Length: 114
Length: 113
Image: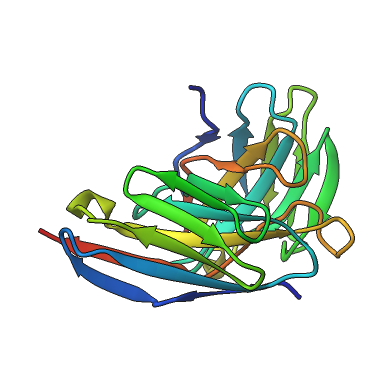
């Protein structure tokens, strides 16, 4: 069964204090790994899709990387508006028991203090 | 850019009532997914449709049913509602089924009293 574990559960940073969020996964053939940002009571907002080990993607202060067992979301010089829950999700290949569904981790609640 | 539209945004029902949630995917998207998110929980996959056919089924109760229509919009029908059905229900859409990004709607907050 596909499993996704995110750490830490919660992270408090000072504005400008860079850090990383971790997403460890076990999946029967990775089709894609997805990062989303979710604000309270709102729908997950797409950030990145990673497909293969060694791949990296960047957007503003965020950078996502992927290995064969985990992904990292690096946040450089965060601002208070980066405060949100960051969700990691995996999609397994069609050879497994799922066809497109995302399996999510529990998320990391990020709080950035001014 | 157009996003996923969900209606209603908020819904209050009594136990044992029925509810219908609607989802309008991003134009040209042919795949729709439904997820349920309880308080403090991660989204849990319920069911998905690709080209109007059910493509996958997750932890969806037998009391729930869904379908995708010819215009690709989808409806989630929930009957005999229970207190535990109170949650945020998200619809996501994608172009294609595998290895493509799912874009989420704003969700429907269902409260069962």
